[in-house]
Each structure stands twice: as structure tokens, then as C-alpha cells.
Amino acid sequence: MRDVQERESEFIDRLVHINRVAKVVKGGKRFGFAALVVVGDQKGRVGFGHGKAREVPEAIRKATEQAKRQLIRVPLREARTLHHDVTGRHGAGKVVLRSAVPGTGIIAGGPMRAIFETLGVNDIVAKSTGTSNPYNMVRATFEALKQVDSPRSVAARRGLKVSDLQARRGQEAVEA
Image 1: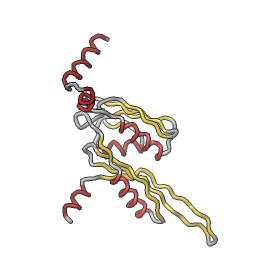
Image 2: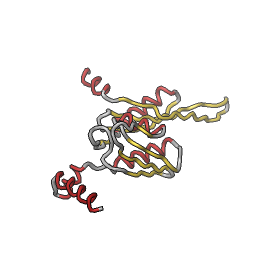
Image 3: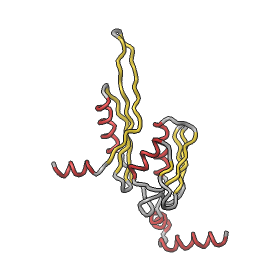
Image 4: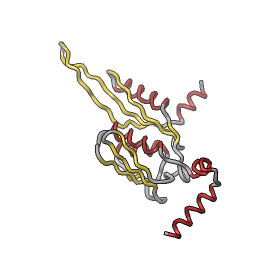
């Protein structure tokens, strides 16, 4: 039991958005709530969930459970930023994520900021264009994060050493 509680406590969760919906019935209105939650361990794992219920706490609990089931791993450079710039898109939501130098901080809008805080990113510049809908912004951000590759995985895919890959990158900069 204690191991389960320790594992549960390693995640931090952020409530991104609550939506109140009303259903009109004979006696008046019935209210329901939809919650969007982001969960992460601040070490490179993050997930999001969407829960619906008649009460807010129940909706948040459902969303948190779903987020913990849908965690993805994102490779981070020096445990503080992304390895390279990426763009993501979902519906009308478009996001651009750029790696940043130390001391930059998290420069991002509401839903994206929650994702980066739970992911453990300290330095990043992000811009959302197209929509301000938090659901689409979160999904677009996750699409972008899924595209992030570490030099180690790229080198393994190409059958090279990481040092060869880094050296090539330096030569291209000199030639340009």
C-alpha cells in the first residue's frame, strides 16, 4: 500500500480548464462539469486527461486517472529544455516550441505553461497560433512533444556514434 502511495505522489497535476455545461430538463437545469488536467513527474514524463461528471472534484479525479494512464516520455536536454525546435498541430491549434538558453524560463501561454511545469522543462519559448481553445492547445502541444528526438536516438537510428553526429553538426555551422 505504501509503495502505491509513493508512486502516486511522484506525479504533480495541474488543472488546466473546467467547463460547466447545462442540460435543460423539465425541472430546470442540470449542470455537469468537464475538467482538463495535466499530470507529470517533472523528469520528462507528462500526460493529459479529460473527465466529465456532475461534480467538479469527481471530474478532476477522472481526468487525473486518465492522464496517468496516457503518460508519454519526452527526452530533455540537460533536464531543462528540448533538444530542438518543433511544431505541433491539432485541429485549428498550432504551437511552436523552441529550446532556450539557461535562465530564459517558461515563456508560454496558460495551458502550455501547465504542461511544461509538470514535464520539468525550465527554459522554453512557446507560441500558440490559431486557437485559444485549451483542449486543442494541449493536444497540439502533445503532438509537438511526441516529435522531439534526442541525439542518442537519432544516432542509434542512423548507426552512428553521438559524438560523430555532434561533430557533423559543428562542421555544418562552420561551413554556413
